[in-house]
Length: 416
Image (tube, rainbow, N blue to C red; front, side):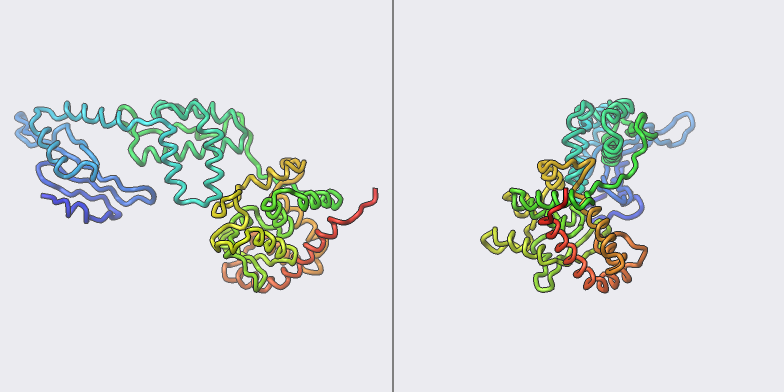
């Protein structure tokens, strides 16, 4: 017979296991999954004597009576003993199973929130913010959110997806898929005790056209860029102004800018160490004099030495919480710029790349400019480290030229 100590010490392996307690009771431990947790189940079966064939046969009844450790060893034995007293345990089990299934019936919203809580542990903060925004704006406001999970049909989801644009529909479809996958893995079954079937549409999104990646709009006309520079330099909120200044002068991605902490700034070598970019590798950003002065001004405004783990570009009054990914776009809109057609936060990279290539391709080199904007290259990880090291001095020259050019535009007078 089993003991509690034995049950607690057993290790999950790549193969399913059965630990027998005797008299038809055993603990079933499934194989270790790639994701999610293992659910250990108490199972019970019994044999009966078939008089006509004079053979011992397994009864129709064979089911599980609880999960371990929620159902203890002693409780599992008690339930087993109760089932043994009944002529046909199936009748009793059907009631037990009905109660169990009914207790597990949850709304789509309840399971979606459980999935999202688990999902947040394995993804970057930027991804969490995006999914939270979609949950808040679309999932939680739709009638499907309060429906029982087992009552949602393909048409319900398709009707929801048709109310939003194609890119958003694809993102919401992914949330639906993930939620139903989570429901299956964690046992939120249908009313009949059958395995839940994912009703999310598998085909193309009905009336939606295929989504195509588009180039982020960025101003490349010098006259218009000069107006943008002056607008940024005069922006009232100092932290947001610093964030826009950084994007303008450095050409980095918005996520890289928002992730910078004070400990990432190497004042001696005048570089900023980005721990992990979109391309999943560390990256070094050389600081021009203008960028260095801007960061020193932000530091001085704190009136005390900031914690190394605090974000440079943070939420208002929350130094250990980084700036939202929507803040800089909101600021651009307040300055009068259309972030869909005219200029977006990511468009600063378009601005830098276009003008830098036009001005310094021959003098500094195409590869150096591409290195500065961290575009993917078909090189190995080792060669990439060497390239970054070799280009750092050249990139210092490039970024100082760029910052000087930006300041010249800010005071330049154009002919009418």
